[in-house]
Image (cartoon, rainbow, N blue to C red; front, side, top):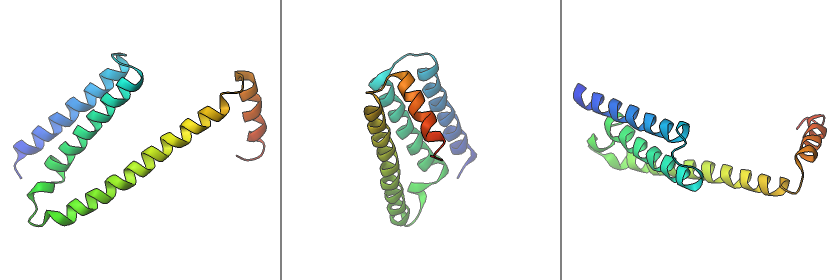
Length: 114
């Protein structure tokens, strides 16, 4: 692997990271649009990491790496989708309360060790 490929991968990773930061910090997009843009940039970042740093296509038998990569994607999707699902349902279930009721409820649960 040449130094040129490492530099290209590093610069592409930095560019994608700065682009994602500017999308959020500059308030260029919001809501679902921002979420989809950040997700797309994350996928592009993942491909760059796999190609330039983990050398996925360069191996003689890439099938083993591809299988482990597929397993990692499944676990990652379970964690991300599960987290978003839990947060959505928590938000939905707590929406009935006013902010002062939420504060009172949270302080009462704090004493129970939760």
